Length: 108
Image (cartoon, rainbow, N blue to C red):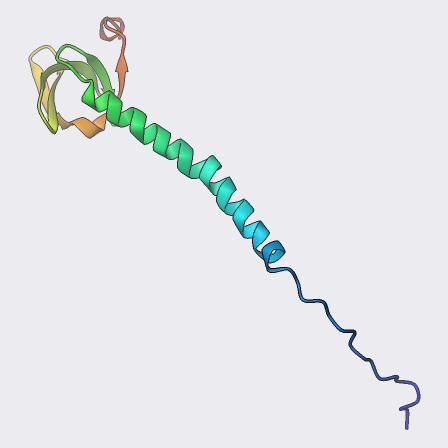
């Protein structure tokens, strides 16, 4: 009855989208993730490995837990850290977060 008001819609022949343009946002995101997240994390991990391998007896360090002390003994996986006079604790090397300049602990 109302067929004369509704005209049949004919779909235009759709052009096939370019597959490269469909994947371009994915490639951009991957590149962005690499330069914003992955690469800086790898750089920090490398710096931390270098820090741990350069630890020597007598270095003053701060641990991840906030302990500050002087290294008395360095092993393969553990260090002996003197945190006060005659108070020594054994820690994993990976717990060391930074080396502070010598004499810094005396000012604390």
